[in-house]
Length: 110
Length: 154
Image (cartoon, rainbow over all chains, first blue to last red; front, side, top):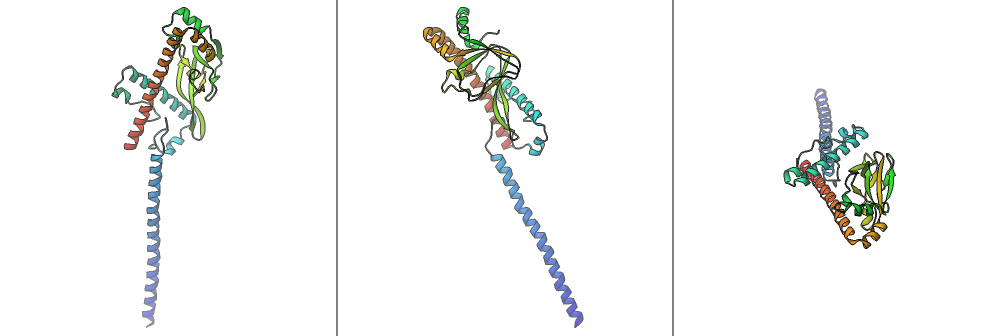
């Protein structure tokens, strides 16, 4: 009888431990599932944010951009403006769609 | 000095008379000729050197003056002086020693009232200058929009 009770107690204890472990595991998954849409939502909001003239598209990781010293970034912007100016002048000399959408070598957008 | 776009088509002596209305202004390296939002009283002809036209942009929470256009000898800047509300819409500074001829709105208006043919020629040249810059900026703007569309559709 004692053996039977001992076995039952151990079974209940084991079941409780299993329940706790399962609960913890499923809670992590639930949190992760909730976090993913939040990240996705941020990305969508960033992509949908109002665009500004000369602003780089959000596809480039922010961390990668912040590593560039500001002086270098300003030079990139200036170089980009000069290249775009030259491209626009080429278009005005001979207006056609291919010249209007010619590719740029600008490091700001490549 | 290179041919002045604003005086294109005028007889040399007539162009000289218009230039005589102006005053020479020297801008030192790094100096500012006019600032965004300032009252625009004069239009400027670049006689020597170079001018950078800039607009403010927020770069990493700092306001930076970003180059929009660069002008050299013979080019005209500051046509806001002839168009209401007479406020500069850009900042102009000199990256090197620069000399410009400042033509005041008041002097030009008075002279053109007395010499309508000259006024017409200068107004035509001015509209060509403004039109070319508008077309240039339109093309630049559309290229940026195209890139944004490509980035979003990628």
